[in-house]
Image (tube, one colour):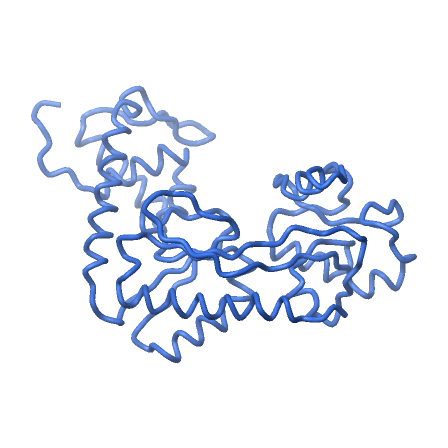
Length: 305
């Protein structure tokens, strides 16, 4: 570089860090909610401003150059500083108007959050709700969401967390599937098909920890998408593990008792400490907590069919 940079555009640095961390323009675009052409232009603009190549382009994506790896710590520091600035500014907001972004799993977003979101909108029409439906955890400190509903206890520093309750899991199969098969004697009954995860090892690990070893190959149908998993159970592809609150409410499903106690899914609310007291964030937090607590109570009271 012939002269020091004094007006470096933060959006170019953000594009650089995200592409470096995700390894491709497409993955970075999904992370930032931007288009691939825009990110491509931003990376090229930063390279021109710095007078050096930042990536090796190849068929599998973008690999950082030695120069890029040397710059990443400072670029990440800029990202963290920008996030801190945004959080500090957000925490000063004193009105109930504005947008609150809620991150949750796909099943939570599709099955449980819509009526809670409707209640929030009815009570607070000045607050807009955005739901980030993903089974990949968002980073609250980078403002990917304002509040997250987690199925695990968050441990990240500078977050406020609250345990709301727990949701039970059970074994379920479609009634149509059970009508054409002999009654299953166990989850691993060789006369029956089972639905499991693909790359996610949670089910296999959970059974191993409970003293019931299974392998990935014990599951005839596999997917890591939670909504697809539920639909596979409903379609009669085999026996699966479903939230009891969902399974017992579905007239096409039947619950099975194999004498195995499945772990529960904990419900945690979490938000950055810097914005937790912001009026609109606090209001949505409280209504989410009430709605999710109602779910947990309903789950405990729901009789088995």
